Image (cartoon, rainbow, N blue to C red; front, side):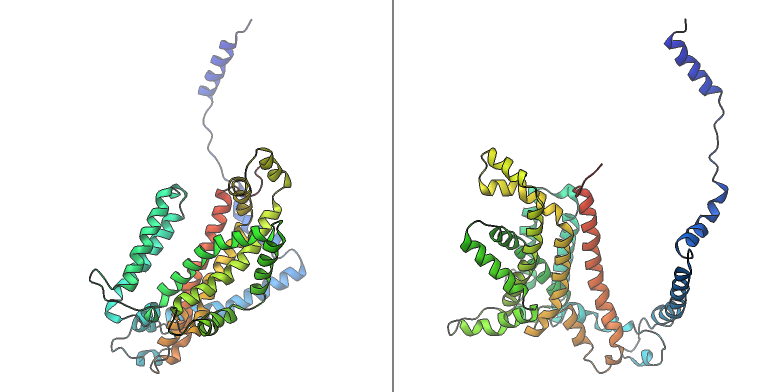
Amino acid sequence: MIKPEDDIHNAIAAADVEEPSMAVAPANSVWKPLSWAKSNLFDSVPNTVLTLLALLLLWETVPPLLSWGLFNATWSVADGTAAACRDSTGACWALMGEKNRLMLFGVYPYDQHWRPLLATAIVIAMLATSALRRFWRPALGYAWLGTVVVVAWLMWGGFFGLTYVETAQWGGLPLTLGLALLGIVLAFPLSIVLALGRRSNLPAIKAICTGYIELVRGVPLVSVLFMASVMFPLFLPEGVTIDKLLRALAGMTLFTAAYLAEAVRGGLQAIPRGQEEAADALGLSYWRKMRLIVLPQALRLVIPPIVNQFISCFKDTSLVTIVGLYDLLAATKAALADPEWRPFFVEGYVAAALVYWCFCFFMSRYSQWLERELATGTRR
């Protein structure tokens, strides 16, 4: 009779005798790209025609763009004028070298540009830190409170040796980033309240929240900013003024909250009724039920539309120029107002567009990562 121990020893011996095999790549591995192209790009006459047209379009556009933007571009000028750019057939990226401060910081005092630069670097560093899940602790909230105090001190000044700079002189990237960040932070809790109010069983609260959401969503942001900047001061008592930056921030917050409320309401409607019934059976109050059970699930379900609204809010900051604020786009326009560099407006707008794209692309990719990290959907 063969014992189990003998089987184990025989298997080990056979494994020792067997020679290790080398992994050999399949012979047709070279042809896989060609096979994929044939099955996806040239599998029919219409697809073949579309593929050839796309290749022709790339051939006609990519080489000239590379020639204009890289190979024949002017990257710097020695005399501070655009004479070298006029003689070049490529892009004039020297514009950014000569006008980068005006484009990035607007009309902020020139000798104080280190302050908005440091404030922007601190905010970006905090955003990068907050994006990592291992830092999601209560201490992060206190760090953000300290960041707000430090950034406000750097931008405003007025004490500890810094000269005072009024908000009318703020501009460029710090203003764009600050308006977007504060608008999102203030609009998000307001949107949750509006979404819950719209689903309330109390007719008065439901009517007020529904009316507010539909009214704000029915008008463009330009109108909201115009009313906050021009119409609202007319209703204030004589001698009372509110900073126009705060008025613009209030308009953006109220506008963004209305759209976010609909995204949150969609997540609330997707939660099965049994979740709330189970919470009621446990004797939880309405607010504990929402905070512990319903809202965490609802917000996870609507991460994409919420982040989409965040991206929209970031881009909508370019509209504050109508109330006299120099955001990134308005500061770029101011830099291009110089007759010396006005012919190279394309390069200026391309640079501004790249800044917007970098922030929006990061938010989009982070949204996808957050969905996977929080296990949105069903895992099998």
